[in-house]
Image 1: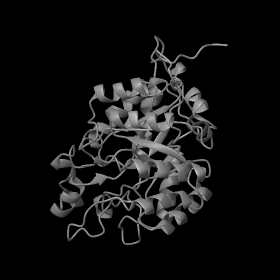
Image 2: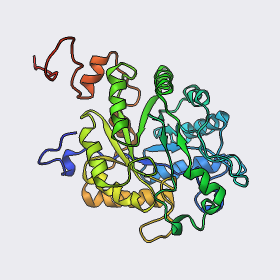
Image 3: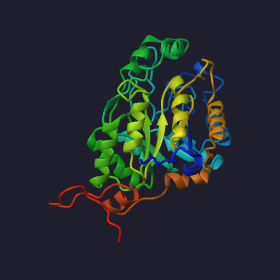
Length: 354
């Protein structure tokens, strides 16, 4: 992305899209009973409350009635149907992991994503979500890496078995699976939202576009949670933003008390934000903070910066929900990327004005 002299001024920036992740699959209900929904009605009400507070993208996980993260697609279908009725304009974004929570905390069951084929079945959800998040490149996902003991010590993650399970978690996203998943999602009219951990992931996405494995709008989230992903070093996300195609959108995501400062920098830079208890349970003073309170905090900061909040309709236009392209060349042009090099062509491909 290019930054000009006026790029930090709010009137030159897109309206702010706020993503909220209010279901927190890594936490047990007793970790924050005031804010972790269990019943289906509570899941839906949480979305309504977040939407009313200013969030226009809902990152979805779902729990069983016993409080465990659900791995049943039927539960996702039930939730999606309820959400379509309750918040029809909100962008519904299913977390591509389905649920990474262990089945059993007591015996140290592994925290893992479901099988390749089960994750492909997210393309068959009915009603279809607007987006499914997708990882590229198999990566260590040690979500404990940047959590201080004072942050997790009074939660279920202090259980040694759970701590170990989440510390050793891996995101499976090999080349064949990614290509097939993109094919199935786009065939179903579902937009992939790329969750990227570092610059090599961005380069992989560019190759997927240039080779025709994905032809559509490019919505990217930089996930700075450490533990195999980038850490919340501004140099990391500045390079990510700098190299993101001009026609893409970038959302910044981090963990625990890094969430607010990273989001504030995202707002200043004209990028988009994500909050919610999946990312942090705490404010900057170490006090518990609900997902709605986190949204309200971001809207206050945005107001001070002069950054307007996108409505749900505007967020759909910014993300280009429902849009797909017909060729590699069209995709590259729409994303503001240089065309592919022609055979025997020398030097850098340049677009010439007619």
